[in-house]
Length: 308
Ligand SMILES: [Zn+2]
View (cartoon, rainbow, N blue to C red):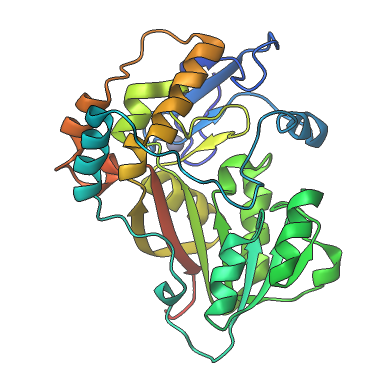
């Protein structure tokens, strides 16, 4: 068994799962976990072509909007309402970053259809996007310059440009090469800039209860899984220091869209042995601390020697 990329401790087998979006494929993906720092990953080395093939059917985050379904049964509505009442999560907002100039420059790495670009542009930022998917780039380019590239491979056209804010929102977990993706974040970040990275929270109770059926497991599109601690360790390895941690995404875990999504995964690949009781999830999380409660964790990070 391999050792952890982040802390050097042994990785242990967690589970095996097939791709729920391509149930006809026989390939099983194995997830291994570091018990010390809680970093987990899909075992194996993947090529860019293989990874591209993971996105060929049913993958929808590149669409412009994703209208949530309306709750129907009163019990479902009650579940969602109770969760909503307990939701103190903080979605990424443009004013979250202290501003040092009137029009700061932001690079949205893996900008998708550009929803975040639009939000920051409206707040006065000069925004540039990087996105591998051509259809998504076409939509995102309404909000500013969008270049072809990935987190690991910055577009040549950027030259040595650096940004006040470098944003990776639900991107790092998709990267083939974690180390080079983080090095590239560091290169893009101005000396006094702030990197913002949001990833699924693998320390959440939902991740623990649902394993491969967890909405944000989405294996093999997601290849890396972090807790706040392992995200901090990964950034530290790249010479970036975490200055702030925020959690987001509580009530949505009880929304019909989320619960139906998880049911579809189960129907598609028939995983066994996981606790799917949404009421139990609510009971275990409604009054618990943020690290177990929210489905996503977001950190702000700066160069390790910044402001020292
Ligand atoms: Zn580790």
